[in-house]
Image (cartoon, rainbow, N blue to C red; front, side, top):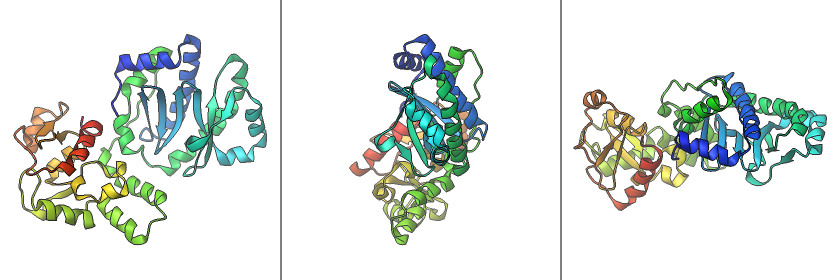
Length: 326
C-alpha cells in the first residue's frame, strides 16, 4: 500500500468530510477509539489513510473506518445480545444502520458492524455505540498480542499529526518495539484459526514454510544451492526467505520456490524489513533509510545482484518492491 503524504491526507479527509463541524465530530470519535486501543498497549493498534477512507486497526482487525457513508464501527456481539435495550435503541435510531455483506460481522472476535452518522439529534446514541465498540476493542486486544506486521508498516504518523493539528489536541503514537519479522507466532496463530479445514499434513507443510523450514527450504536449497546473492555455500547459515511475505501469500505462493530466496542472515534481515529489494534484472535496490554506516557494517553495496533470475520470480519481486521495500 502506498502511503499518502500530509497534503494528500488533508485532501482525502476534506473530500470525505467537507463540513468543518462534521469533520471535527467524526475525527473526535475516531480519536476516542484510538485512545481506547492505546490503553491496552501501544503495540496493539495503527491507523492509515487511503484514497477513500481512514481506518483504525487493532491486532488483525479493522475496528473503525471513516468513509463517505459515515463511520463504520465494529460492535461486540456478545454484549449486544445481552443488552436487548441497546439493540432496540440502535435499530430505532435513524443515525445507525447495520452493515451488510462481507463486513457485516467478524467471526474471530465476534461482532456486528454498522454505520453511524453523527449529528446533533443523534448524540444520545453515541454512548450506546461507544460501550459496545469499546468492548469489541478490549476483546480484540486480548486475542492479538500485536498489530499484524504488514499493518505496522502501513501505519501513518502523518495521519495522526494531521488529526492532532485539526483537533488541536495531543494523540498518542503507537510503539511496536520489535521488528515486523518477529511476529512469526502471531502469523501462525492467525493461519491456524483461518485454515482449520486443511489436513494436518497440509497445515504442517505450510507452517514449516513460515519459519523457513521443511519443503520450502529444501526447494530453495535445491534451486539456489548457495546464497542467492553472495554465493556463500555454508547452507546451515543461510535462511529461506519469502519474496512476497508469507502472511500476504496464498497457500500455493507460500510453497512456490520462485517466491523464495536463499540468503545470508544479514541480507535476509534487510530484505525482510524492506531495506533492500531487487529490480527485474536482479540488481539490488537499497533503501535511503539504510545509513551508509549500516550498509558498510552489513556488507551491503550497490554492486550486488541475484545470481540468477527467471520470469516466475518477477511477479513476486514486483510485489516486494511495491509493498515491502522502503
